[in-house]
Image (cartoon, rainbow, N blue to C red):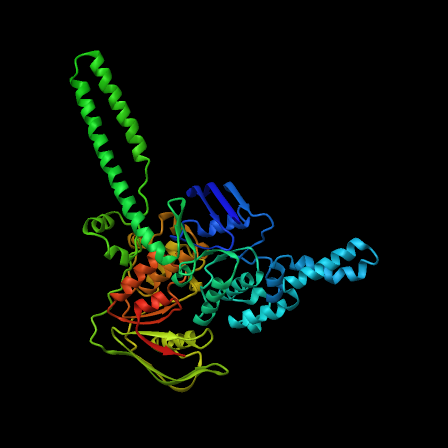
Length: 547
């Protein structure tokens, strides 16, 4: 066993995240962590890495084991070059490098220092650090960041920093790696390379991910739910089967509890009536005692909170009639998407791209042609930097009647200017970052000339799983999952007939991804999307335009 964790209690504000939760990780084991947005996944990583000490419990790491984790924030590292940042986090690198660089000038005939220097030479070689800078460049090159080795970390985008963190972990050769959403912002080539490394590595890994491709490659899944950490052996497919079975059993148990509560309440009423009708002191005392016992039992039964029930759509379809009805009655609240009906179309042409060559100082892609009609689905596919986002921006500018920022070297982009477009972007618009969530939702509607009031804002917050307290939180302080749900509100505000989606499953939890997929499959408008989530792509399908 390389790690054992018990968290007796951990709260964030007035919300309790963990209550007597525990788990372990064995040597070399790949373990995925899943859970609804806001359940405490990132908090758990901060506890394990030692960044958060405000909890009750105990974390034990195996003797001599070195642990590395991906960072969320990079304050204090902005002026480091990318290579220096990666190397300084590798196990023993900084210490060994210091010995090799300083001891030759200071050790003289001191045998103790000579021995330390000799041991450092052997250790540096055994860890592969003589060629590590070449390895850094190779890994970064596979992430299309090979030209960033000597740039300062603070100049990189959020997505690039995330890839740097994943590269750091891949190069670390540690006994335990904590990796948070590793495949967000990866293209399909980089993602395939990461999955190959993940399968081949002998190191233990704890991976927060809602990427089903990643979860299919783990040995075990831990689910954070109802302040506990639940254990499921096997990969994502195994988890779905076990989850369906355990959810059915939990629903039966919860239903029995509800029936017991109803029975106890009825007994209390009966004991009260019997007590009032009794004429002897002993009989009155007897019914008083029985009433008190029933009231005490009722207090304990009502302490039992309703568990969170979620089952994937395929498993729901395989449930029997009774269990299926139970699930519809008790299932966990999920996001409710507004404005995904589209318009009743007749296959009219919305977008026409013919022989397009596009770029800036150089051509990114050339001779690309496609059409999008009402009700059609089209996927843009290509490596990061191939021009997918540039093409989307050019298309959106054309739809808005604005000039295209990139250079059109050849071909045409034509679009129906009357089409209402909903856009899901990877980055939250800067104009709403400083606003509170409530103000941001109001701004989204008012900026489109749409009616909005406090009632509508509250309803949208509820439908997209925000609490009323979230309404006063600045958008910049929302979690990745919360920002993603706000992006959905933005995208669907004016009932668009064309949706443009750029990696929409990043940061969404599994139930929300499924809800989005269901809504998009029933959407009658057109969809243009970019995604490296193979499950999402299989679900949506559509024609593929390769850049």
